[in-house]
Picture 1 (tube, rainbow, N blue to C red):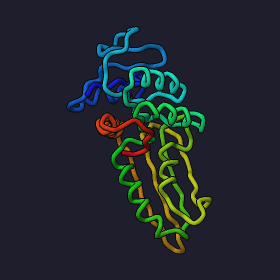
Picture 2 (tube, one colour):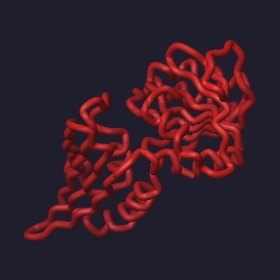
Picture 3 (cartoon, rainbow, N blue to C red):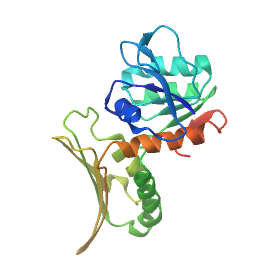
Length: 220
């Protein structure tokens, strides 16, 4: 599978380049300044690819959508911080190509979401707090992952679900969901120890997406 990386000069772009995952070739990518081919040399010509994986910034969305629709290739959007107008642009583009918008590509977060779907209906009367920690340079707050976790929690009153955010140091990513009842609590914690888990998950998602019909997806 030939992958084109939006945000190739960023932390996740560099992680994807160094991951050396099987059956995957990073054929090129782009950042805010340039498009690159597989030798990471600037070019004016898009390389041939099967799928775009976007780990850039919300400001790059128009360009990413333009390229994906022009070449009619699937797009995995793992960038966060979008507003409602951005989401509408993504959904419109998804009428032409398959697009997966996912805030966290790790398999562990997928499992946590499945757990929340199962247990939260049993805890409708409990309070719930989502605590998320990320490195000091993360822009969006709360994280897209925290917001997506909240969407998987059922309670009688969603105003009883709060999100606490911490930014500092080099924390890769930590999310803790705490259900608080009378005299007891339940905690579910996911900790990312490296960015490689997001690279692996993004590639897994891309392999599934290239087999899907056009449409807007938030999970596969």
